Image (cartoon, rainbow, N blue to C red; front, top):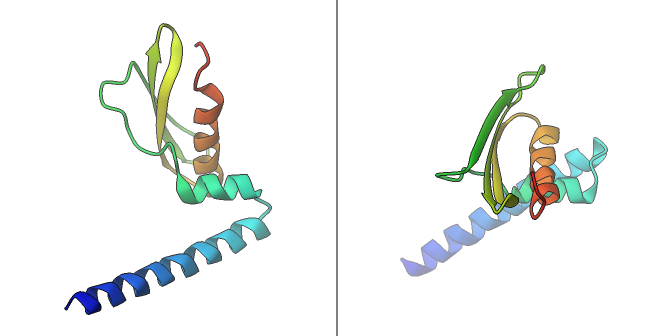
Length: 106
């Protein structure tokens, strides 16, 4: 039984890698940089922050929806996360914005 679970996990990981490789090729062929592709696949700042100091939400003219959660300490951004329902460009941009604002004052 344990060997079967290990086999299933290996098959799942191989399928996930194939899917990620396919997404990487598609985004690269569409002109996305390696850094943008990495943001899209990893989504390092994706999620919500309970009890965030600032929460803002918007819907773009294209229909993409974004919600940002910001935590501040002494007027400086100490943490931020986004929830995004949109295209690869919207998701990638949101992830990059967090890296740009962390450690800065509002």
